[in-house]
Length: 365
Image (cartoon, rainbow, N blue to C red; front, side, top):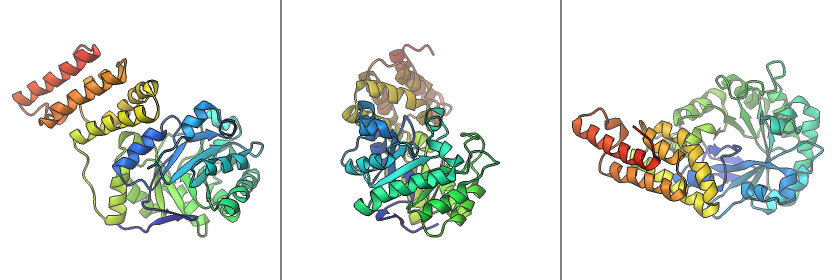
């Protein structure tokens, strides 16, 4: 299956696989990790509060931080028509954004209760005025396109996605990303491909990017084929498989299905992520991000409970690195979790690495 290159305004993307904005996850180190593994056409920051970035509060500055290699970059803003979104969008452009995205789909209370996120789905006229003001403030002066990320609607009685997308295109929004669920669904149930297709059919010329339930490259191919969307945006699936973007690009552009990375590769990816966090953030962030991320990432690695425990209970990044390198050394000698049941020698080596790691973590096997 082949697809053409994606263009959003004046920004041409090298891949139809995009990293979605995710609160608590899409910081600079994670974006750089995904980019290093290949295939990322565009990556977005975490959700940025417009007041916080204009006041340049420390946490907001960490969320908006970028570095060489982190391009093209999308900065996602959230707020409502009473907030200084146009000014915040200009700030984003001045601080490295190649694309500015307006969050119209986040279902989380702390965003929606501030009249941002998916609450914007409830008043189309107000939301379109808001988008128009941001586009007028940004695109004519800077050339930077403004996009919007929406859901299908607030609930099944208010499936406004197609009407909103059509109206946003008319005021200059350069692309629409649509999560194929309603706000009421949150992340429950399967993504509604028919709903994404309705949004695709509603616009005339701008790209529509499908989002939701992209766990493997074949999911992306199916979504594009079924809905006619121009690209896909990967969110939670990237936390488990940050290499998924390269697999999607290869399948959609080259028609080649890439294999799953090896167990050794995955351990090396974890070490790379740790190094990136320590380079761009700090020790505290390394502990938090590795502890919180290993449960999702390890779902692709087989039986590695002792490794997960050693990371979860580590008191320093050095302990995390020691555990990862222990497992990596064993894996380079040929051991991996799937061989546990393949004979006495493999079982012995499995027990050896498991007990060594568990001992470091204080876990009893």
